[in-house]
Image 1 (tube, one colour):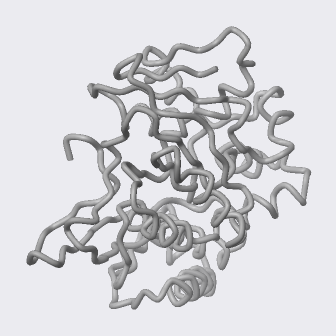
Image 2: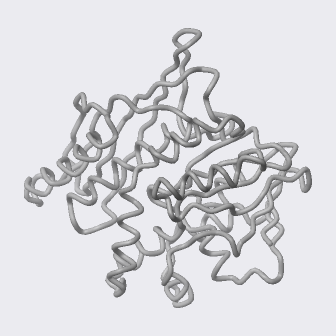
Length: 306
């Protein structure tokens, strides 16, 4: 808990530990089935980020039963269940409450060998940094809520990303011997979660802003002011930990702070294995994965954005 890990790990015996996490939120798309898929994909991601395998889940539901048709809830749960089946996760039950605002998510339990747990700390100087999904889901989600998401292709691409499990990426990471740290990029944005990796540590990060993947079309949204409130909070909180090169444009820095829903994994791996891991990710269909920077001995506990 001291280092804001993605999930809790409890050791049962020398060769087995359980991973536990919980996540739920309000709808970010109009279609109930798609919302259910996104919520489940997002909740399972924390187990994958720890290097584990999710096994069981329990639904968490808040629903305005008096003002919304129950068929909407059925579609949400169907989308979530289908995504759990894809992940090989067994739904055991759950809990629901009547609430004026609809919310959905999961409590998830997974397993892992205690010696193979991946933490968000542990990156070593010289490691390469890999991000497995493009950024921009928060910005596009804000555009959807504001009814200004006019680019149907962009919206479809973002939804496809948010409903893509981090399962395959996690499997490839687990098969790579010298992955030293891992986290998933969610509400704090890329730079916020990157700060968690080095805050108070003996290493720093160098982020190559121009190498970071993002959804094409979101620059225009950012430059017209279509950005989520969470982006402002992320930037205001973490900007003191950053050294930003003068050549980094403001719109791109905003994207690096964008709060993600069901974002990708952010991985620190020894540099000699980074290109091979990236190639295997591309071969597995993770076309958006990219090397976005490196771990450095200096500046300690800070991030340079160049």
